[in-house]
Length: 294
Image (tube, rainbow, N blue to C red; front, side, top):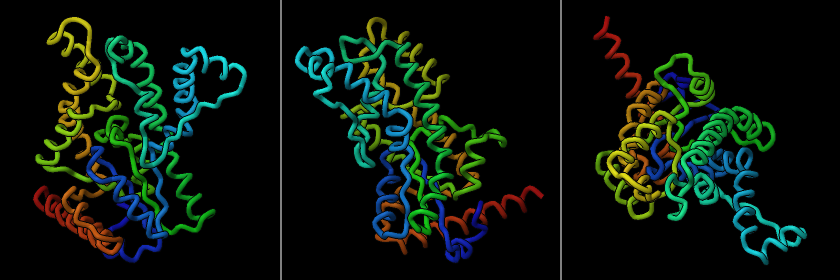
């Protein structure tokens, strides 16, 4: 860890953290709270993906839909109409819409080959956007004068990092620049996330191996045309379970805090106290482990 103790964290003139965990557990809420203090630069990986790396793909998808309507087609071809994504930190719907869901086109789904293509593009974009954090740390400090930096990662970061590999280039780069902080949910949080997802299923990124296994298993259990919403609902709980050990492996390079602890924060002072506590309890747990091993 780049901060050896809670005291080192408190005394650091520049605090840099990387928040990770399942979407819906408070990453963006916490990052926004820090941003509002005026002392923290908020870097959103999803926003960077949807603007710098996939912005053209997203806009082209919207234009493709508009071209199907004769009146809009005429306006587009005469440069009388501009179609673009209005993605924001708080509204990532354009990126989700582009990523789509696999299944029957007549049910709003994407053919599986096109879906895989978009998944591959998303993976490359997420890796690049995550590594861009280094550039933005320097930019935030040198250009804007922000002393502190919070990286709000995508919920799928554990899918593009192999934390079991000590040579993983993405995790090594990020952990060398920032303190990884896992926001860990309880079983009750998991149940609430599944219930919320079932009410409004949203596209998400999956590791290629996981997607292949899920697609084949769903096809065996549900022969015939695939309902895209039914598929991603069926897959969601499995994805959560598969991600937990991957998040836990990432947290071995940093600290973990609970979603309940994050939800109880009322301001930046509470946040600094929580991170200091997390660093010290992590160091104590690892020291105890080392003693037991030796």
